[in-house]
Length: 149
Image (cartoon, rainbow, N blue to C red; front, side, top):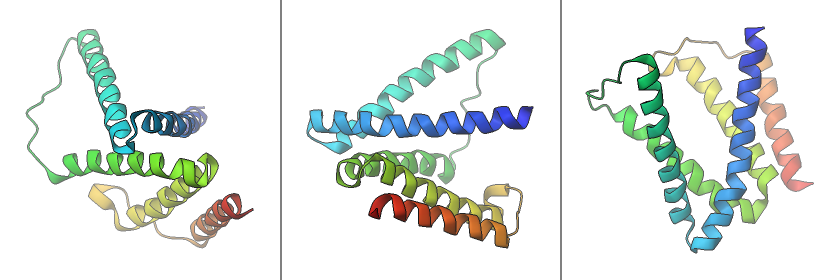
């Protein structure tokens, strides 16, 4: 049962990304600058997360320990998110939402297979199998079909 709930959460997260993309694109048009739209998007997300952290801290009766040592991965995570959001804002009007999402998911899958294989940042190592390669190729083929046909 838990596996089904986790899968549904993944689907909901993917739907949020698909819905967010055209909203940010519209904001980019309104502002006249896609990078400014990405900035507004991240600012709105930051404000919401600050509220959620405050509420969770009050509920749990403890606050997070913000004295985390500076590590390059903490900065890179936010930078990668900025690159993703800004790229999507530029791409949606040029190739459409479905194609952008298809290529984004393809990139996520290909990167995920590589990260699993090398055990990136302490992740469990998972071997590359024929099934994983076939699935990735089918997804890439599907993304190309969405864009070309």
